[in-house]
Figure 1 (cartoon, rainbow, N blue to C red):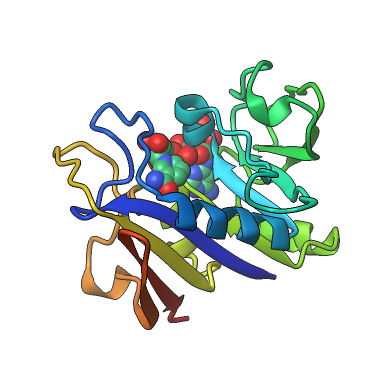
Figure 2 (figure 1 turned 90 degrees about the vertical axis):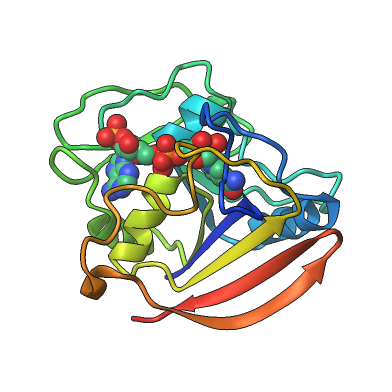
Length: 210
Ligand SMILES: NC(=O)c1ccc[n+]([C@@H]2O[C@H](COP(=O)([O-])OP(=O)(O)OC[C@H]3O[C@@H](n4cnc5c(N)ncnc54)[C@H](OP(=O)(O)O)[C@@H]3O)[C@@H](O)[C@H]2O)c1
């Protein structure tokens, strides 16, 4: 399966406000690019942190794509904390909530996959999704989930849109959170593929070195 990480960050490398609340970093041409990318993949994945802070719909907007095809929405949610009123459960597209095996919760308008003990085992999950015919997946965040996909080298590429703004703050999240690297051999190497001006921002494309 081809796995693409996409995120938007400020010029100082932050992906949200210091409260972790979402802010508009992307510009119009970048939003169009993201919605076209959503329209072209089989699945789109986020972590429960993003669902709880941003409550995204994760659908393709008709404003950007004619005749949109919504990908399957996947949420990594070990303990089943997705609120029943979350927009990912609005029935507008197929949704899969992935929980740990110990979790017994079910969700309206969604299928549940149990995978891994305590925490979701994303390597096993990738195999399970492949068995279901998912060939391409967009990982849209947040910070902890992006780190997991980089650390395991499951991600093939990472696309970062850099918006022309500074958010600042020691605690504002960055594209990759989680535990991070504690030694040089844990650093995830990237290969620069392209960088281009997109409106008033810059899109940088990397391949993940495996
Ligand atoms: N600018 C952008 O492009 C963008 C996009 C999306 C989000 N964001 C921002 O990112 C922030 C949210 O990021 P976050 O780091 O707090 O949360 P997150 O990455 O969305 O979700 C992390 C949670 O997912 C669950 N999870 C289950 N299995 C996992 C695994 N194998 N690896 C990693 N996580 C796993 C864990 O909770 P459990 O243990 O309970 O399962 C974990 O705490 C918000 O501030 C949001 O605004 C920005």
